[in-house]
Every structure is written in C-alpha cells, then in structure tokens.
Image (cartoon, rainbow, N blue to C red; front, side, top):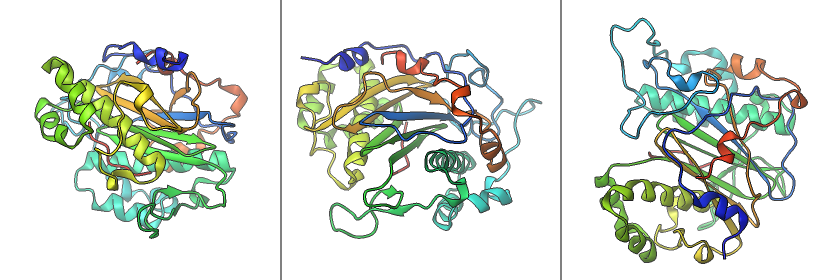
Length: 329
C-alpha cells in the first residue's frame, strides 16, 4: 500500500511547471530536524543565452530536453557575455583548491559556469547552516564504502557530522539537499531514445521490464526519473556509481525499493527529472526553495542574506506532484 507521500508523487505533471519565486539566503538556517530534508533549486542559464521567462517571478519553465545549456544566440542585444567565472577573484577566495581545479578542467563554458555557481551556492547554504562564512566552510571526503580509501562522498567534518548534504547538477539546473541524516539528491535531463536504449541493459531486470512495457514515447521520461532515483539512492548510501546500477531496484513499485530508505520523486521542471533519497521516513512534502537565478558570484551570494523569519519557504514545486548529472556530493 502506498503512503500518503507516495500517492502525492504518483500523479504526473507536464514539463512546464510553476517555478517558485527566488528567496534570499538567510544569514542563518536551522539544520533540518529528524528526517526532514531542505531542498534548494538553482537555475543557471548557460553563458551566451538570453534571459528566459524562468528568470521572472511567477513564470513557467518551458525549455525542453533538447535545449542545449550553452546555446548561443547571435545578433541579439539581450545575449549575455560569457565571462570565465574563475577570472573573478572572489571565486578563487571562496572555492577550495580541489573545486578550482575541477572547474578549470571543464572545457565547456556552460559546464564551468554551472559548476562554479552550484558550488558557490552550496558553500553559502552550508555556511548559513553552520553559521560560518562561505569561504570558511571545510569540506572533507568520507571513507569509501568499498575500499575505505579517502575518496568517498563530500561531507562536513565531525563525528557525527552536524549535517548531511548532497549536490547534483545537469544542463543548467542544480539541486542541493540538506538533512540531519544521510541524504542523496539527483537531477537528470530527459535523454533521447538512443540514450535510453544504450543504458537500459545496465538496469535491474525488473526496471528493464517496466520500461519495456511502456510505449516508446514514454520511455525517456520514465528512464530519467528512474535514473534520478537510482543516483539519489546511491549517493545517499555513499557509493555513487561505483556500485552496479543493476544491484538495486528503484522502479515504480515502492514496496520493492531498498529497505530503510525513502526515495521520493520531485516535480519535473525544464525538461529535467529529480529525486531525493533520505535514510528512514521522509517528510510528506519536502519544501523546494529556488535560489536567485543571478546568484552566481561570491558578491551576490554573500550580500543577499536576510533574516530567516522574513521569508517563508517557497514550495510551489513541492506541492506539484510529480539530462545528465555530473556531481557526486
């Protein structure tokens, strides 16, 4: 029997869904108690793209899965330039050496911009939860669950840590989850049929059977949602994709999913699917709050703090029932 929360997410919604108004990051944030999870959404249009309707309050995201995040529009006065985010001295001051090295290794400007923006947002949020400046947030690697080496998932130090977090980004969209217990989030752009056909053999047998029963036109969206659940869960347990994708069932039958974890589908937006995995029992409706779309530089991140009680959580996305990811946090 499905729980009330599972019923909430069982109803499909169209690709165009209302996006909540962006909220400033409060100066301090309380760590979610119990097994509740805070979710933060960041939309980062690729460099060289004109401002879209998703940047205005009460707008709708309508970009489909075939819209490239680095699409350039020529001879348009509204097109943004494509500055290198690593040229901003403030970025170098906030990100650590590993993050700067990773950002510099990304060749596509859109990928670099999204990586920098999402990590600046992550550090600002963690700073608010931990009550320290973003540049003073210390990130460590947990032991690898497989070999015990120092290359597990990113974490904040502590035994136990004061909070758990997860970060995922894909083609212009980033999702951050923060909880008091292990948590994993994932966002996926809906792929083309060829990608589904190529990846389906790596799935759990029952998951493959579910996809095969769907009409061809419904498979890409179903696969993206399934893969978002799978990566969210694998990040939650700390293995990531070092664990075979076929080892765990994350299909439509919630009763057959891994015991002890609650995996929840999030609303589809901008041609993406997303999911969150939480150890234990998840909240009935996790609040999704949107970070300001232009909140992509250290100055913007660190000067938009306001008192937490001045802004209620914006959870329009969470109230709506119900790519490729690059992050392992």
